[in-house]
Image (tube, rainbow, N blue to C red; front, side, top):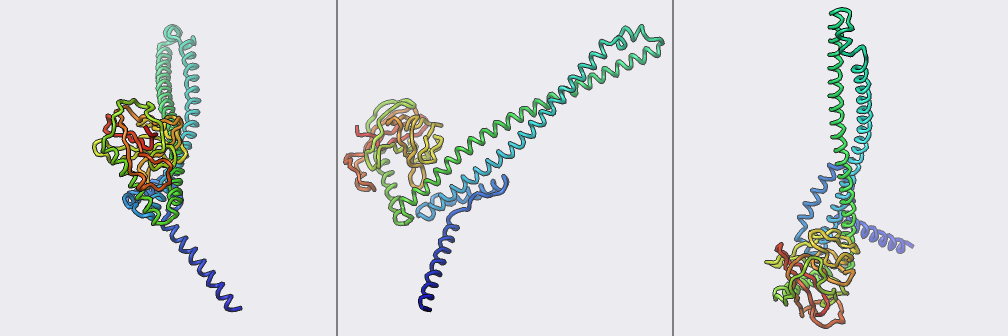
Length: 384
């Protein structure tokens, strides 16, 4: 009996130690949920996390750092969402206060106008206060002087009431403008929160995708990085060859059917933005809205969406994937902006591709040179 009990205790102890290690690793690599309390502390925490993200940038050469980078990106989005929602709550309180205040000012303004109208009518239409009565109706000179003085007092009071009405009206208009500004600000913040929630989902999906691709193994992550690097090098080599000039294209124009040539798991557009003079890669999300969140439809900002008005994001920018992968709703590649288009090809993909492909020909792409100093790249297009 004792040996069996001892064995069970050992198993239990090992299980508890394993659980403790997992919890320790989890707390080390992942920031906690966003609970920063108030706007000031949220902004302080946002600044701290941004510094941590900057520190981690360029250190994504191992899986642990990449997961930490993604975790901090997720945490930052959660903090920014909470900060904006807190700001919305504060502004909503201000809007309620202003609405009550404007209602009171409006009522007081109506009261002032009513009183002044009544006073003016009594002062200038009553026989007792008419100039004729002042001069001819007075029994003595002293009585006439007292009446004249009384009229001056009434005139001063009228001027004072008019000034008060002007000040009240000015205050009313200023606070009404403030109310409209706050309402506009709330609507803008609400739109930003919705965008950030979509971005948060995209970042969470990116982390999940990375864990699935690598199975949480450093060796798989290193292999994945090499494959992504090989794809970038293949595209860069094709771009440097110059390719065949297709001619000028206009923003939004259909320029070629999307395809699956090269190392592709299916028909889609691998989309990049590069500097024309150096071919260095830029973040394409700067030109679009909603480019975080797999399954989302990416919409235009600086550039026209390469997948057209109806599209679906299948892989975002980051984690070594310095592009956007989209499936075009109409099956066509659309030009991001006016420019000159060129057709290029690559024949090296079979030496590094990580998927089994039935297609056995070259990989094809199009790039467009734009007047803003950028070039946009559209990879995996159909075979010419």
